[in-house]
Image (tube, rainbow, N blue to C red):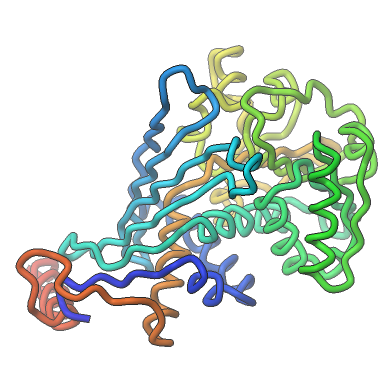
Length: 358
């Protein structure tokens, strides 16, 4: 590519590139969390674009910089329109822009709905792997039968060899049945049973992923859960603040998760502080905190969803596309184009290295 060119990757190209690379994707998500916990990132708060008299729909901008081996900047622009499901459309759509950290120029534009879904699922699976007690039996449950939990099943199967049987629940019975059929089509040897209600799901499972479109808390008790259960609170707004306060809470980023009326934000408003959050997943990965407070407490992982994860996965996708000659290159997209981008990057890196030595 020459300076000023942009690589465009469509959704079907991203899907083909990511197919079968779950372990590599989880590794990149782990490295991104570790870089962030080590202070080698820049992560402004996400910006929520909302619409008058419309509480459900929103578009979110997630800008970020990720250092270490990534050295990439960019932004995800992702919409969430739950009503799309009624018309057979996906709830979310997204675009990821990747920028050079040397020139600031845009280098790639990637259709990012799958990037977003799989980085979310990889994050959840990584958390489950870290929070599980050694030798702990896991019985897997999914609350919410949409794309995110479908992808979380994919990644849980990648980290847990015994992940063959899942219990699912959705407030819409028809959606649960379609989810069951979709799982059977996608995953060999999988067994799916549908729970009649939330408490039945909680009582049958010890690792439960919450991925719903709930706008406010609807689960006021985890009494049905077995001691030591793990809750992957991916949708962030399912649990009442009182439930949050009763659990061992692990998050991806404390400042980010305590906003936008998440369950943890409501718990902060209720108590006036954040002491109920024990640590971040990055702290656990770096050995700065224990994986669990104790064996009996229910541990809740609440990930706000950090833009650094989109960068980590997006960069992986771009590098794979470049090696395999996939995607479309828009030549001279930027004004003042013409130089070979690799030559420019080499020169700038050499200049940066010289400045550091001086």
